Image 1 (cartoon, rainbow, N blue to C red):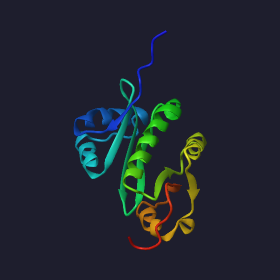
Image 2: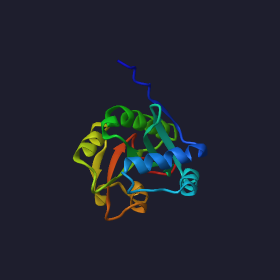
Image 3: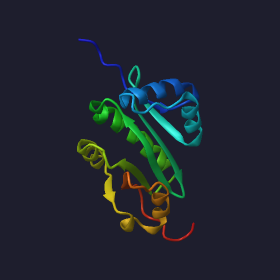
Length: 165
């Protein structure tokens, strides 16, 4: 029986652009083809983490602003990698968010997401939130990516700061 290569979580680099494009195409069965230049451009717009196991098995794009971390690009493929690669990916994002003293991580989930994905996010501490139920300081960040095709899940990382620092 062959040994399974270890999972590695790291920041994506511009030289990963080709592999990321190939991964996205494979993960979506060709429905999403992102040109190399667009991948490079997106890598410059926010932080991306990759999980590799000889090849990419998960990626997430996220950024933090005003004590709110937002994960809005997320692909884990194959789905069977969710418990290991997905968990490792979210652990790294949460670690980075805590370093930046974020109060919350917001996750934008497509309405078409499989129930098993939603259960997985819940196992990580995320809960679905309606915009009206999100505290006002986080709502602006949540609404920036609002849309009919997604809903928001949130994981509070620390107490809400209610007055200026």
